[in-house]
Length: 311
Image (cartoon, rainbow, N blue to C red):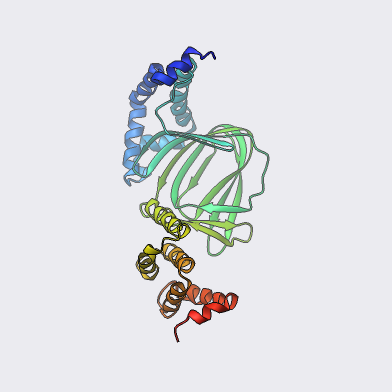
């Protein structure tokens, strides 16, 4: 079997990429770029965007945004042609129809270049609202987006034609946007900042606005949710005491407690039903009503559980 020398070197030493590394270092050293990244750090620490002139111009003025992106892309692409196996030391991600490269990040903020591939017009069936600020400006391409605003029980929407210079702003949990059509690939510069104490993301059905699911915005919270699922899947009964304590702890997050209830019922139905009874007797508890409802449903669906109820 013949192995190309470049592949052999990649296997033994990794990809040589001095030009790629030099291109990134030179770009970051440019005075304008250094100032933008410095202000990105301030923004990520909580400073208002209105007081950060360089960052505001970079994401708000088309000419500045295009120059910022071009200053990054042109030398990097030249270096990548010379070093096709090199991997830029930047965060990258790809999914169906969208690719992203992280130009900079600090604290809760990130500056990203995103490319949306061609797609036919789609009719969204749901929309996800996330607790973050987002400022986007289209640098190239054409497409169509829908901007949503979640008000008092209603979801308002506005269609927007996207072309170079188009800006989209989301200010928090009540705003969302979806790219629904791309006739020419869209290149978008994005500035995002997570909330300091983010509310759970919520997916709503369209057009009626019914809540489909909530998703924790806290990494630690998500880890605990996964841990509960693993304990349940493994039928790990030694964890029953800790799971019951979590289910009854009114200071914990509601959806985390409800997941603990679910896993407790699966591991020990009698103990789970007892916890449902205790929760349904706490009028001030946010789980009081759903616990009482689930308890009634379980007794109807599984009459044998009634025998496990205390006399």
